[in-house]
Image (cartoon, rainbow, N blue to C red; front, top):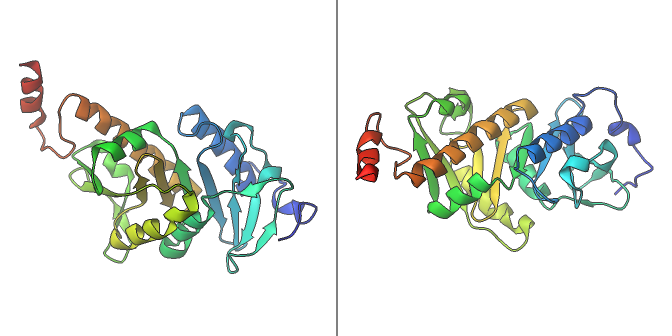
Length: 246
């Protein structure tokens, strides 16, 4: 590892879209949304032109994060940090972020502790499914090899795998990688009683996908509350609402 007194130019920039600045601003956004509290959750951005990976640290409150807190790895040599902030540890999410880069060629990966994600993980077994909801159209559609071929349609069924939590976050890596391989059509993995990992082609796509998925998860919890299945057909909700009224 290279110490904090080296490669400061990698995280200091006046450009608000620089990865180090974006991680800080997005973490504040996620905190405001209630998706990350305390020091939980995290985000990583892959700088493809410069072959670098930017990572939020462990143990720093998300709304107080600064560019100088950011870790930087070399993409081709993923065991090598090229910039390490003094006194901080890299996020335990790091191997999971790297999994989305290595297996899906992602440009960014977001991890939140959204309450909606946790609730949905408690209400389902191995998968979460939802269909016939407009917000699904914000999410990408993939072929059997995991390559993006467009966006989902209103009638498409979104399927997100759910893996079991572990005492240590890095121990989730194997299960997450298995889920990514088993579900080439997903851009997210739920972790039971924990939260969710969402990735995208770049940081802005990852942000949109995360927002759309969290909307759908929150909506699903409300649907469960009134007895409407998340995959019911159009118009079928009326029979469930009628049963509720009776």
